[in-house]
Length: 176
Image 1: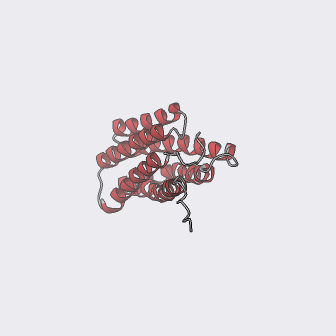
Image 2: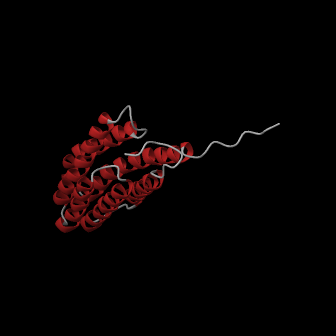
Image 3: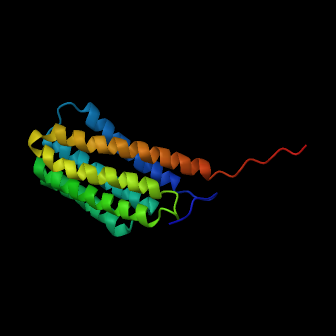
């Protein structure tokens, strides 16, 4: 992990992850009667796109990004409420647990440690809630996953913009 500094460019993939999460969250809010196919493909797209942004940011080991992406593919393949919930919960649980561990291990060495902890708790919480909403159908599952995505998206927007702002060189002082 690269420490925050004047040449830190991690803000770009972090903001991309935020955009992915917020776009998925917006879809879940505005799609009023999604079918199981919409659920499966939307969840697949969200998890695969998240995996790509994780790999670009190098914020988790590549194997974890791969697991999240495979869980996204599994969501598309299952095409059932229970299958999508299980696949998404698995991916979010693995990612959330990894981020919690990274946050705890790096809390004094990395500017992103606190954000990893928060994002990890949101991911694990979302993963834990999904199985309870299977019987309520695609709309409820998208609502739970979308709620977690919106929270995560807002967190990563703030984090990415903070990294970008903190990474700027200090303005030159005026000489009188």
